[in-house]
Length: 329
Image (cartoon, rainbow, N blue to C red; front, side, top):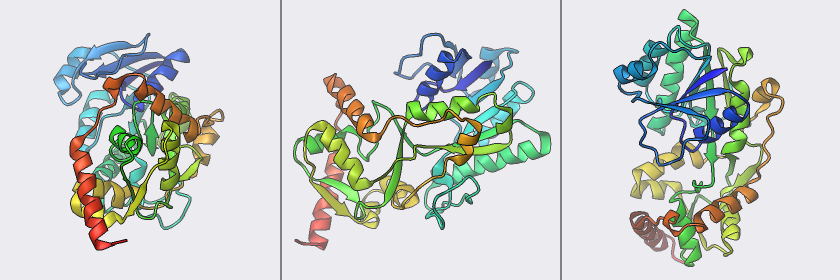
């Protein structure tokens, strides 16, 4: 099997590339060559900018692929470019959408692939849904061979899956208070990238996946309190968690607010039965307690990885001061 990954060096795609190579798939990466992450051994790299179709045509020539995996399309315009580039040149086009495109807040749990796409709070999610709509039209009208994959919150060792990233861990280590939205009890799912890759690679070249959509997540459900406490335990500290309403956070930071009101504020549980039917060996084997230890160890191994964002620190302090005034004691 020959596969083209558009991107291929990111948080999610790197693990997918590594597993695809391990399973004997011939992998080509199309990217601009600007990522700081290393390219897995065995992958061929061609340099081209997917936003510049001429550079892609020059890089790929007349090559065709059994699978094209698109990790960096975010708007319908990006999809139009891909349709022009890959019509007649691939047996399967896998689009990485987002589980945040589902109805928010969800009316019924668990969320399934038939849950309506309706997120009025977050432009990113609405754009992903619009991309899906264009691809479904292409499948219906011209049988363009699509598969849609909706990851939820997926992490790897370099990626701390809480707002602020390593800066939040640094606050814990220094004994500073850490903001948790709401009361910290809404349920959430975190998936290790290597676990996501098992489902994703299992869909590659799978004829039953054509024209279908899937989400791929862990079945471990955690509260946001637990997520922060597990990270703190891995770092060897006891955290001081301060629960702040999401609306207050949104009033101080639009982007953080959108990611909360349009995603993380609401309990979000997904049913993975569909992908398990097509990929029977899809089993998530990395509980977050292990993933958190991996995250902390990776950052502690090199001080250069422990990047602290002082702007985020200052934002947290302002929000905490405002909350203390509004809710004294």
